[in-house]
Length: 161
Image (cartoon, rainbow, N blue to C red; front, side, top):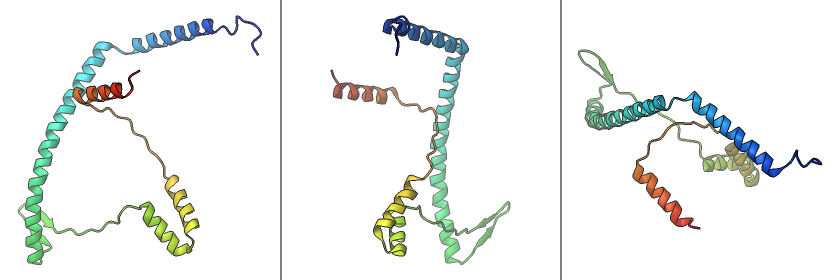
C-alpha cells in the first residue's frame, strides 16, 4: 500500500508520535497549576479525614440510638401504643414491608413453574440477567501506603522476570 518509503518509515512515525505525545503532555500540564493541584489534594485529604471521623461518631451514635429504639418499640408493642407524644414531636411505630431482591434463582424457578419448560425458562432468565443496565461511577479512593506497597510487593513477587 505504501510505495513511498518516506510515507511509512517506522522510525520516522515513532518520532512523530512521540513528539505529538510530548506536545499533548505539555499542553495538558500548562492547563493545570501544580501548586493549585497540591492545594486541592491537601484540601480533599483533609475533608476525607474529617468525614471519616464524623462517620465513626455517627456510627457510634446510631448504635446508641438503636438501643433506645429497641426498648421504646418493645414498650409500644407491649402496651399496644402506636403513637407517643412528646413536647416537640410525635413518635410513631412505623411498620413497612419491602420485597427482596430479584435473584437469578428466583426468576428461573418462577419461569420454570409458569412455562413448564426449564430450557426456555433458563434462556429467558439469562436474557433478563444479561440485559440489566450497567452503570459506572468514577471517584477518588484513598488507600494507606502500606496497603498499596503490599500490593506492589505481592505483584512483583508473583511476576518476577
